Image 1: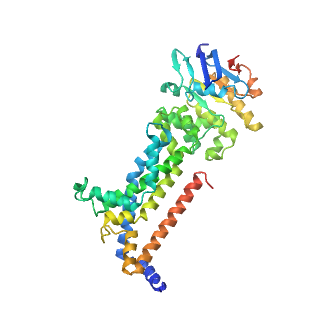
Image 2: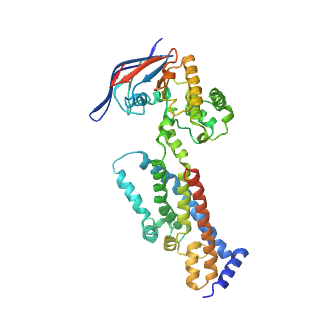
Image 3: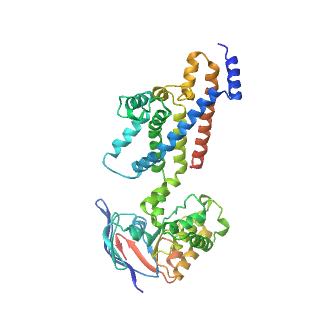
Length: 231
Length: 215
């Protein structure tokens, strides 16, 4: 197979700002950003609770969250499909094959990543942070917020990691988004479709965007890890 | 002078091992004390119990209130008693924000907070290090910053754990000078230490914890 021609064409599409390409890129970005923005606060709160407080069933919750990490995304897509399909319990919301469904799927995928990273960041925090805050007169709430602030680079790494995971996700997006052009077609689903149609130039162009995102995410992660004390 | 803190029948044990059993200890208001004792005698543990960071058996009197140790330690006392770790922790923000932290928790107005933070930084002799990230300060500078941070809060009781350990000669001398100032300001301070120079500071009360007993 001649790869040069489709690659040249891919660069052309990118440079010309092909509308179909831009639509898929834009959808990928805004759905990922919205999903991460919505799921980050509750995930951090749960991660903090699991790391700092002891309560009955705590271990079971941690195991469940860790298990969610290895859940195939296509299964998550299937579960959400069953929930939001017309006959499902959330069918009245008419979410199936909409960006809203993709956002819901992304939130479920990012949730365990954010929780597990937050647990690791908080458990790795210097115990003097909370004690110092309390000894300076902070309430329990203020002491907890201060602890989170002190491990902000670890939390930031969680957010960046979660974003990197969902922006390149394909299984769940196809299941519940339906890969509808102009509505729910994002970068990974467009790559899968265009490649199956034999239009490699679209696939290569979107692949390059995705690889640039992956590289960017890893650069940000490395910077955050450096600020967090790792060298 | 009135008694600020009075301990009676305070015990700490780890399983079957009794660390200490203090029959009586009185701390007068406006006076500095050193708490000496061999390693492992429980000096740090006692300070941490008084600061509400460590559970223990018994209770102590703080002015007219009877106080139980953690987990029943009252929230309001957390703002009256300030404890500084042997290796103090400075938040990863500016030195000024570190000084303002406790004041902010107490709801002190911004202008007053700034004034007191600047005064604290000057008191610690760190005016020229204001823009240095706290993690880049030397051990002595961190210790002085931590002392200034609690002093700015004007707590009723300051508890210091080995404030001069691991400091070089210059750092020790500067920290000692601040401790002498706290004594002269008639702050109530308890310093757990081995440092002979602190122990021999004039006008300081002394307690010795050894073999589980306070002498």
